[in-house]
Image (cartoon, rainbow, N blue to C red; front, top):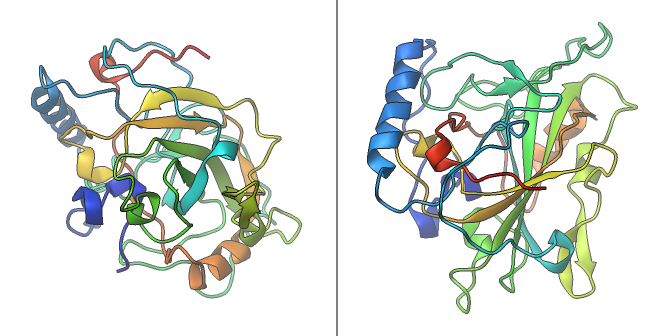
Length: 283
């Protein structure tokens, strides 16, 4: 398995995926216990607002405030990766995928719209396979375009978002949820992930602009490594509420060769529902 990314904060930030997923689905009691552990482990400790969240619910009472990161066009793209099922809930991705294995896999939220039989037609071979399974037509992914105020270049893991001169940059995640379809006329993921230098900063140049006004909020890093503990890292999130369709074959091609060393979908953190761990959405 290749190194992880911003969401699970490996390398410089020491959080991890945890053990590989089991094939079974855990009970509601397991998820409730994880949420109780998260509440107990963060109470009175000064943790800032957490992610992911329901972007359709603006409420939050976390008192920690930090400055909103600049527009992503003023920051350096440092990493692109994706999660199987959306970590966030809201907009067009509100269908719960189930509790999963309790370790971040086979859970999260799915596209709540309908697809045609042609879009759901099987494809040959495995797409972005891993020990947790591969991708199929109809699957939902949440893509994180991670940006940093550090003077860095796009690359693997959160380490690419830091530099020797700046170990504590501002971070912003531009977020787009996609549904995978067997359709050559859908978005090409390799195009969606293209980047180049514009006005001196590395930019993702093809993030969709037709998927609704992004919901911006103050949050944290995500990933299942934080199901029972708080993330201490501060992230400005920008989550688009509408889903875009992407050609599943192009996702497979991207997994085979990209500068980020990403070859599979990552797991998701439990949705954060504790108001004490959420910021208020004001935009």
